[in-house]
Image (cartoon, rainbow, N blue to C red; front, side, top):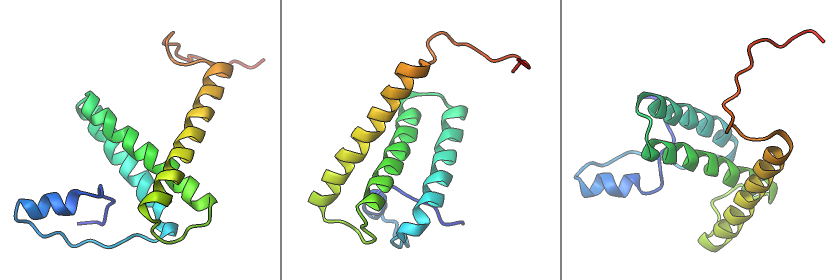
Length: 122
């Protein structure tokens, strides 16, 4: 089995069921690739079974990406304390939401269900 990113509580939940998972802590340098692979995995699960639960998994990975960007910006290359991580998490997610709203205000959303048919030449 290839290594993959898992949620923080999965080892404890597995242990509760009697399974012992072998895990390691990823280096910060690995996180972009691990998060991208996890996002693709979760998006494929959403494609196979569209539901709020599967979409919540996609969103959690996106939040994980925002968390990674903010932790990287503040220069932390080790696991942060819970308090420091919560502060970085809130800031990263606020920045993500600000960027989302800016783009939505400028370019709109997807409410009109527009599909590009031809790029055109002019």
